[in-house]
Every structure is written in C-alpha cells, then in structure tokens.
Image (cartoon, rainbow, N blue to C red; front, side, top):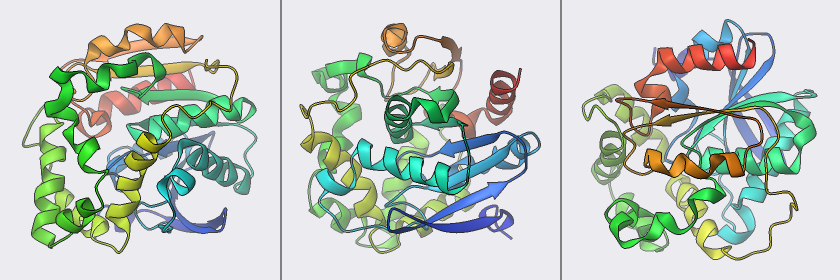
Length: 291
C-alpha cells in the first residue's frame, strides 16, 4: 500500500467542482495547502503525526491531484481570488467557524488572499517561504532568471505538450524541481517521484498547474479587491536558508505585511520544508497553533 492509499480520502462538491481531500485525526481544524507541482501527497510525512493533535484536512486544489481541472481561461479560473473562494467554500462545507492553515509556494498565495478576504475564518497561519508582496520585482531581476525561467516557460501553450509528451518527459521535468529545490539533491525516493509523475500525467493536470502561472502574469496590475494589505492573524513563517527560489534575504519585508509575526529560519533546508525537515515542521506547527 502506498502512502497516499493509507490515508482517508473524501470528496465534496465545491463551487461546482468535485473536490478531493484527505482527512485524518480530530481536534482543532488544520488545513495543509500544497503549491506547484504538488498535491496532497507532498504532506505525506506530516499528515499522520499532525492528526494526533488536529483534525487535518489536506485538499487537492482545483487543477491539481484528484480534484476537477476546469478548462477555463487562467485569468478567470485560476486566480488567487478563485482559489481563496474554493478554500472558503470547503471550510464552510465542513462546518468550521475558524481554521488554521499551513501552506507554501502557490498555496501561500491562496492562503494569504483567503486570510485577507475572510479574516473571520482564520485562527493562525504557518507559511514556508511565502510569496508575499514584499518580494516585489526581485523575482525577475536578471540574476534570478536562471531560477525563475520555468515561470515564463509555463506561459506557453506548448509547455504541457512538451512536458506531457511521455511519462519519461514528465518524470525528467518533475524530478528536476524536486531535486534542484531540495538541499539534499538525493532526498526524494523513486517511489515518491512516481507518485508525482502518476498524478501529473492525468488529463488536464499539467495545464491546471501551469494555469496558475499564466493567471499570475495575466492579472498583474489588476486592482486588489481587499483594501487592507496586511494580515493580522498570528503567523509563523519558517524560511529555509537554502531555497534557490526564495532567498532568505527576501524575508526582510515580512513585518510590513504581517502584524503578528514569528519568523524562524531553517538551516540546511531547501524549498520542500515539510519533506526535508518533517519532524521540525510537525513540532513547530503543533507548538505554535496549540501552545
């Protein structure tokens, strides 16, 4: 039995989509939100330990994993606002008054929009190297292009055709990011990589993830619907010291956007904090949310 088969899988109709999520444990509700190219499985070393203290809900967001992948224009169906509303709908579908959320990568974008749009539904946040406004244009300075090239590549319609042209092509592409973004380049096992390849080989799965990058570029300059740019919920940020995408220096503006902030750096760790340092992450989450 694979790790993902060992979990309790559930489904719900959310905003017209069939949403898949894993749910384990009991206690205060805790959502774990993946980024790209993830799905619920990227939390497979965290779900069971956290379920000893929390009601853990781990959704595949729209376009990812086993959740529906609507073929919509990215600027209509894959914006941060849309994902935040999906999250709201799932929280309320499950009957929660408030939830705590852990997220990273694109998940941090969706979580921040949710927290700013629906602050009444948020208890506490834990974010890994969040994509927050204080990073600004630093993503796209010339020295960053060797790391951020894939964001531009994902704008092309042929991106999913090339990456999805064969299982081998999909594996090569995904293995690059799993390895390159990790501090230990040999961290991910073949079995773990196979989980990603299998799920990302489903019809529409590559398009769903790439559409998030397309939506990001196509909505640049769009007016922010939320007047307050700050998040007021208590927030723990774990910032890996060796993430090639998000240098630790980019944490400098966090206090400008989070009014109740705790920042911790994580040495000898890359982008995949929850996979690279699972014991540290599980303990930090538990201590911060239920001190």
